[in-house]
Image (cartoon, rainbow, N blue to C red; front, side):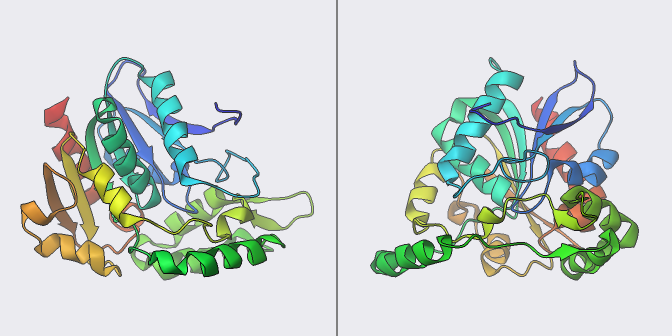
Amino acid sequence: MRGIDYHCSMWGHGDGPLLLLLHGWGDTGSSFQFVVDALPDDWRIVAPDWRGFGETRHRSPAYWFPDYLADLDQLLEKLSPRTAVHLVGHSMGANIIGLYAGVMPERVKSFVNVEGFGLAERDPAGAPDNYRRWLEQSRSMPVFAEYSRFEELVPRILHRSPRMGRDKAMYVAQQWASRDEDGRVRLKADPAHKLPNAVLYRRAEAEACWERVEAPVLLIVGADTQFDVAREWLAAPSSALPFPNAEVLSIEGAAHMVHFEQPEALAAAIEGFIRPRL
């Protein structure tokens, strides 16, 4: 697909209603397993690994956000060429959906946005310094940490999501990393993802796309999120939300990684929002 062998985790029945789950930066589609376990089994669920993450083992000198939109577009053409699709995205995955749903509103039936709030507006005056930073850091590719055992990755996962428990964290570690031929455990992610983006984030452009979203949107915020902009959604009137036709739900006992810490509550929210719209 677009020159890349895309890997997708798939669950459920081929003739069931289609639901796409789109992961965030550094994650994999397979780590939605805990949410899938809590959903009714009549769904047909697909969760791709974005290019350069997980088993979609693409390597590139740089990653550009428009490629994710084009990848999603091609994926929907293969999975549901004639019917709009129900989409759930976490963090980066939700930001991709938010843009796509505004650009191609006829392709999105509903959108569950889990902590996908975008970035802060950047001052254009910072462009020269940002380009320089990108050029200088691109001269030598960054690296991810490596480990001797999967167990060494578990504390890192639990640091961000302490409520998920060690068993689930171990499962995620085995999805995020693999043991190479030399016996070292390395993340299944292209280190080029660690490079800064050469282009400054333009929030006004993102918001222009969000304003054109026609699908109903559920904004989900972890009650313990560390991101102020997500907490602002909870107090905002409907007219001030970043998407038209949107509602907000807070999930207790979760921070940013809602699908790790409270998968059952997230599954219930997804089911309650999308099922009436099938």
